[in-house]
Image: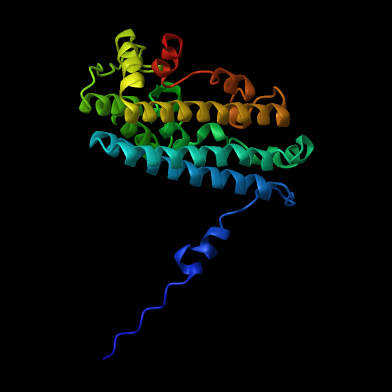
Length: 266
C-alpha cells in the first residue's frame, strides 16, 4: 500500500499565514478602525521580543565559549531589531488620542505592563522587581518563566566571564540588590575596563556594542513614554498602571553603568 504523499511545503503553510491572520481579534463593538493597528503593532512587538530573547540566549553562549565575533554579530542583530522597534512607534503615533479612546475602554485590564517577554529581557539585563513577578501570580506558568530567568546568567555576568576568559582581571559581579539593578558598580572593574579599551581592540569592540544596546534600550523606553504621553497624557494606564508616570521612572537607568562610568577616565 502506497503511503499518501505528504503535501509540499508552501510559503503559506511554512509561515502559518492563515493562523497568523486569524490572531487579530478586536474587542470593540462595533469594531473601531484603529484597534486593528493597535493589535498588530503590539503583536509584532511580542514577536521581536521573542527574537531578542532568542538572540540573547545565543549571545550568552557565545560569550561563555569566548566566541568574540559570533557575539559581536549577535549583538549587531539585536541592535538592528531595537532600531526597528523604535521606528514602529512612528506608525503607532499616526493614531490620534481620540482614535485610541474610541476603543480604549474595551481593553479592560489588558496592559503592556503585563508583557512577560519584555520582563524576561529586563531580567537578563540584570533588573529585578518583586512587583513584576507578583503581577502574574494568577498565571503560574508565566510567573515561572520569570522566576526561571532570574536563575540564569545576566548579560553583564556573561560578559565579565568572557573578559576573564581572555585573561583580564575582572571581578565576577555580585548580586547585591533585590530591586532595580542587581549589580553594583565596581571601581576595580572600571579600571580594568579602561585597560581593555586601550589594549584589547576585540573586547573593546564588544564593550561598545554593549553600550549601544544599553543606549538602544533607553531610546526605546524614551520613545515609548513620549508616545504614551502623546496618546493619554498623564492618565492612568490600562490595567491600573501609573501610565507615563511609571514609564518616566524607567528612563536614564543604565544596565551597564561601569561601561558608562569609564567615559570620564580616558
